[in-house]
Length: 321
Image (tube, rainbow, N blue to C red; front, side, top):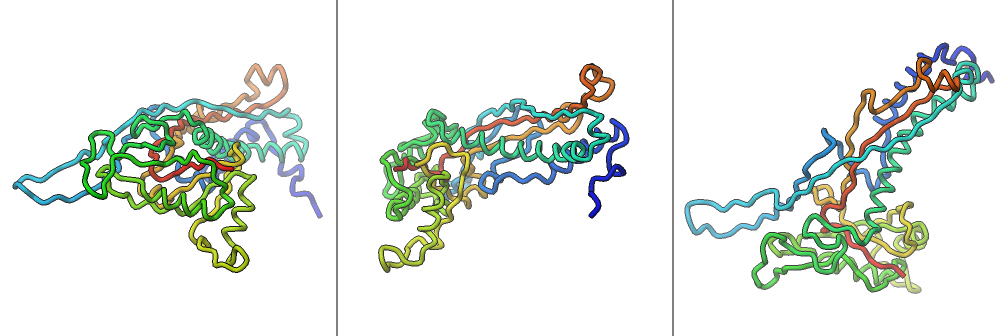
């Protein structure tokens, strides 16, 4: 069989090699998909600094006592998010790109590697935020994982039956994720999350995020129809195990409600500012001093991201065992 990388497919000039790289990079960043667990957290922004408004818009109807209506602001809280520049790149001898089929193939793969690396960069930085217990929540200024989050940071909730001023998204007592009764208990605790009116928000955990060391055993247990020698599994089909490979703690685990993410109650954000011009992909061609000194072409991709924890409502951290 003839090689797919014959001399006829090699770029004929450095200009063509760079153009091919440009085209493949633009195609790759357009098609690149982040890991499923963090896809909803990556948001494109139009400037390197943005103000992020936070509002649960927890609507509570009251009896009309006068002709004028009551109104609430949609932006209870806000924070500024500034992106940081990151870069990665590849270089190769021009002679190899023009004459060596294998070197040319690697040159053609580099744009896809840059796009994949960007997605992994976003996932890894989001996990770093999750695992840092010193991170605070812009919602109420407390630790993001706290047993005493405020239902309404702006005002106290009246001591009315069924309403509460505080709620928890953190379990500090060690619980093994492989123990289904522990998962049940934490799911029950998570349902007590409150909205700005002090009412139960309606959180219903539907995923359990697990480190590599726990994922397989927990996934297997959750999929078993029968447990304990013949009892029905009460959690089968109730919660989805999700592998988060970048988690460094081998025991801690998280419950999340992804339906709340879809409503805008996201626990974190990876804000992406993209420059598709000369600042985004930088080139060292034959006119550069680098090429004159080395005989190599060089391409550098620059990306801008800002990472921040946001709403603590739809995620619960459990210290593992």
